Length: 218
Ligand code: DX5
Ligand code: ZN
Image (cartoon, rainbow, N blue to C red; front, side, top):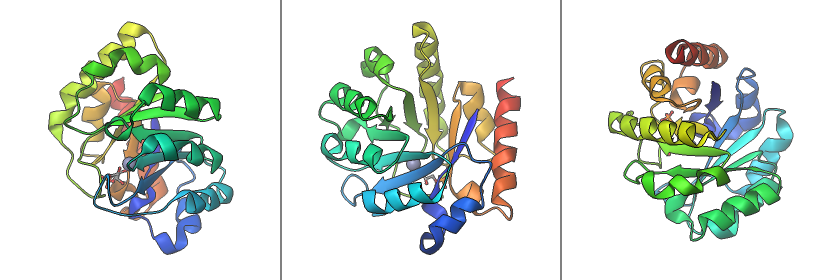
């Protein structure tokens, strides 16, 4: 059970300090948005590289960008240990996953809430992580979509059936209210943005989220 806080709702003028507030995080989730794939704009590889240099916690890049095939490998070079591209934005997801792995990163693929998992079953062994969005990507602070839970269960069943180690991440609206549902459905890696950074003690929230997920899974 891993907690990967998103810095989308952190103070962008003090990102280094914001990351220091969450030493219990397993990963730092960095939401890269290009204002085309989603209607919001954040940062690119230069800023991600600076952040990677400022922390020992590994970075988990979530690319909400068009033309993922062309840009994703640059995020491994920028120092991200895991790089997630959206299948809706990738022309050749198998080739791209292999390129990310070849560059030394963990390869991960994301699906928006309306994208079905079934067409990608045979592709799962190419991935180190599968990200199932539980909100429409683009903004932090949205409400968790319960309609995504059946897809999480189906994805868990597929991964178990194939006996592969691919992590199953959920992203969007994850909080103490919703994390148990995700863990029960079979997720093992949890992104939480506003839940962590709106808490009085963000690091205590990271630990509370992990504990809730572990209890629900057990
Ligand atoms: C949304 C991003 C998420 C976002 C999560 O498009 O991919 O990572 O930061 O924020 P919360 O946890 O507030 O939904
Ligand atoms: Zn994200």
